[in-house]
Image (cartoon, rainbow, N blue to C red; front, side, top):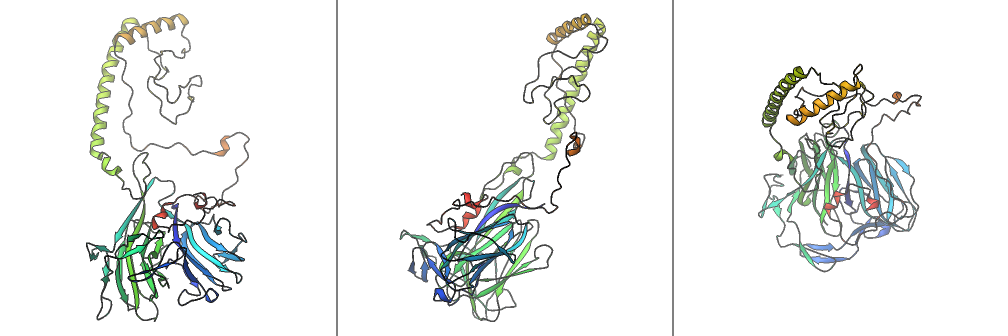
Length: 501
């Protein structure tokens, strides 16, 4: 089964975005990608920190940025004063010549799988990138599921969370340490808020991993931490890989000339939640010592909910349906007790009716209207007796004793029988509703066949390729404006077209 669509937000400062040329050491817009913040910068105890929303901008002809994801759609937001173009999986994506409500480009209707979108400068005027909204997949199509977010902190009670993260010795003389507990982030309104405490270390080996952890019961995960100066590329290995591959290697670069305390460093989606994965992070290439600061592992789990009509959960909620369900043994005992009680009542009623039938020589009619509610989904008319009239689906049982007159029965006999049945009805308790016993899995009716319609034209065959439900593309002027406040990572809860939010 294919996953269901789910939107996540990746900001321009994320280490998961590949910029060409690299962000490292570009001091001018003409030289490559340059970072700026809407509210400038502020000096922090650990460096110069960006305030507000981040943009990556360039005036270099041919400069580009790319994102690879597993899903069906992508929306790229930013601004531009010159022509630009986008490529999707290597093919030119025809889009607007100028941004529409800060929407630079979008692509929808892709088959579920791995895709890459590239935004490229096609002139020497300003091109700015703000964030991307990507449609990934969680859960399973056609099933009921709940979405649950979990956040695993890197530091618990002023100590590294080594119960979850395997923090291995980095060099002969160094190991992982903690960032200051009193560290605070400067906000656009000049206020301050505490920063999640991070584990900090310098990665040296390109062969032996310095950070290892395991992931299970997950559809996607995100490693969050600092982007800052004195950072270099790092390599993450996911084992096993996706789609039957033995492993998957991803290179990410957490360098930024301006410090940002909360960005996605590395992420994966398209995971099999029944599979356990191992993530190993090490230094990349021959660039020497590489510092890394991370503070949170966010996990998104889209899991199947068993049982009838489960309610759809929200992010952060934990399913309680399992705790409220009866055990199989309890259900079986209840069913057996009910069936035995019904059988005893039916036997007693039949004996009473047989005695009165013999006394009056009247045979009870068959094919009378049902005295118990019909099952939902049943045909409105019986195939055996086309003269039957169905009661409304939600109507209570009819008190009437009217019936179709059997062939060969006179009207007088019918009236006499009805009067007698009315006396029986008011003299004795009515028969108990007929109950079905558990006979195992029910046989489903045949699926709808278009040929049942007389002289109906043959339907057009659908494409054999399964695709996810597609979010409608943003129309002119319908995309949301760029927010002034910093986009937080919990904005990933969107599940609708981002252009309509």
